[in-house]
Length: 135
Image (cartoon, rainbow, N blue to C red; front, top):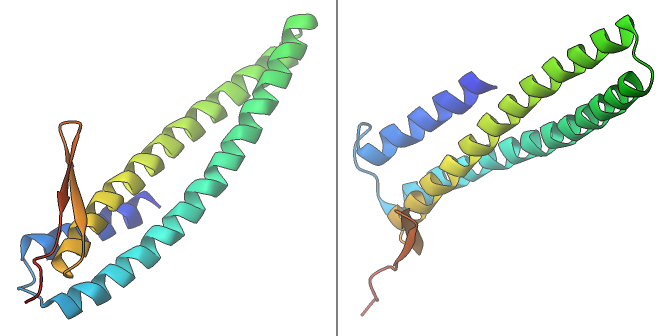
């Protein structure tokens, strides 16, 4: 999943930097539609991982509670196992979330190139980017 996210982001950044030549607004619209399809897939992936992470966290808390009430060797081992699993899921979800957030900014820039509205989010400020009015 990470390789897919990284490769798609590199492809879009290369398009935006002009490494694949200049594109007319119509082509940017098609590229934006492709990017939004990929974004939709990643959002579904993110939702699934959020649900799994919440279930793993709930099981971790349940096992931790049992281990506190009745400490046993296997109970403590299971607690450590769930702690490791929860930590891995939290890191994975954090990276997924940040990747999708970066893709939102790329989509905004693609909207601008396609002749639509957009916004620049820098230094905690939002700057609208509006298309030129047509005569």
